[in-house]
Image 1: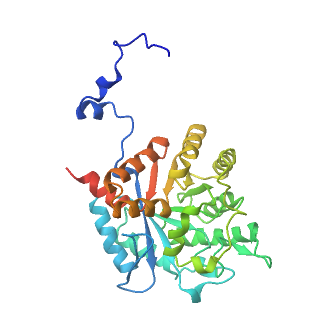
Image 2: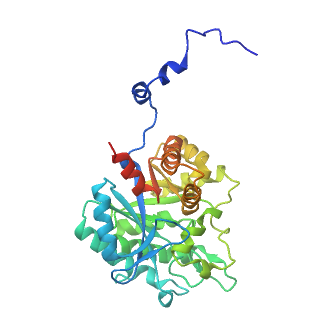
Image 3: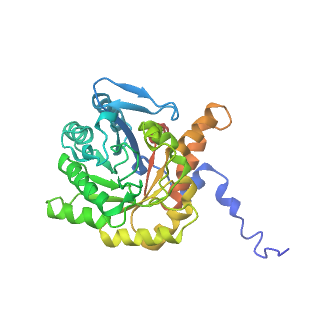
Length: 334
């Protein structure tokens, strides 16, 4: 065993002997500036539906969603991400409801911006909430998701959301070439300041189950999977290639999804590209901690704060997390 010849001159524990010195030498800190709160919006008025597989998270109609945003503002959350629950009769093979200006998301964006002009609104650019089969795109007669045909609809959806007032459109579909197509369309239609948050590394993960329950999408998808467009969990070099392509095509921010199980991907993308990187602390990751803490196996506050800090430490500039509201309350405590 090699002896540390510098001991006792070098004692790293000197910098751990009080909370004051720990704070001064802390390398990473989690603040409310790091938090994005995902929100599920449903049609109708005065509607609130609990999501069984995501304790503490609800589907809200737009009027109640506005009241929730009012509370978020008071705890210093500055950004939200919207996800729609679309009624079955509005779903179709071609996902036409995805770009309906009178649809749920565009109308919700307008209401949010009317009441809270300074809150940052991120919208999901994907077709799975709007298709009868639950896939993120247009399919052929063999149920294969068609790349270029899907992009045409995604472009219309991005323009629809931009016109409604979205600050950031976030393509989460993983179609090849959708970033440059959306960027060109935004420029051509006088939306040069609309930002693109690209899900550059979205993995075909098992941790999305509660999210699909939240969207009422599990039945539509059935036993099918999304392996032909979402990434193989075994691959990391591929994530770097995807990220590099998206930057060249005009993405402003890159997303890694999921976060907890892919901290190495967050780190590699941040180190290689030195560009803003967000990470999505997904529904399954959230529900695992909730279930364990509700059973008394974990201290929820300590576990959540450690989890989000680890995502920040890996290189994430911001974190989409269903824990965000609780975290903001904890961080605001004296």
